[in-house]
Image 1 (cartoon, rainbow, N blue to C red):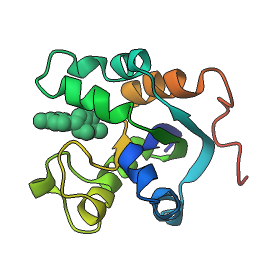
Image 2 (image 1 turned 120 degrees about the horizontal axis):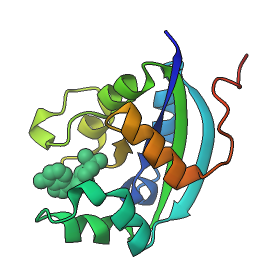
Image 3 (image 1 turned 30 degrees about the vertical axis):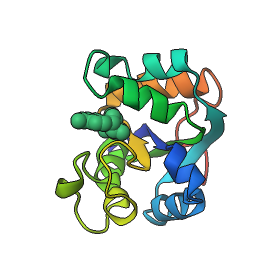
Image 4 (image 1 turned 45 degrees about the vertical axis):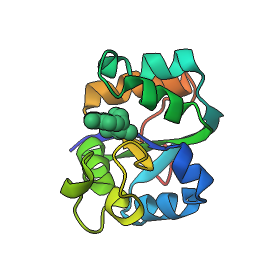
Length: 145
Ligand code: CMP
């Protein structure tokens, strides 16, 4: 299986609640490689682009307000099947569907303020990683070899 990469992002509520270290530790313990990391604040234009697929949904204004409310911490994560592995680790969008042991189940009861984001597909991952990291550090699997 070839290495795949994905985006894991600690959202503003996760940063405010000092959960960054815990979340990074949990994902590292699985054995994936963190190959890039960036803390930054989304402005309105960036958030609209990042979440363009949700434009027009009733929750879109609240999502923009939430995601621009403070810094986020974005991680590029690499492993075989990284997209599915990280998505499974964060848990479902709906609070009642979150399995115990997932990050969202363990740290949030909220629908909007759900602590973390992870890319939904390899195509989404490449789009989101390019938005967040641009051209920096695009080498796959170059760490821990
Ligand atoms: P996420 O699944 O990472 O991406 C879309 C985000 O919009 C979601 O996390 C929540 O933070 C937020 N959101 C708020 N309400 C909804 C909803 N009804 N359905 C999906 N996402 C929602």
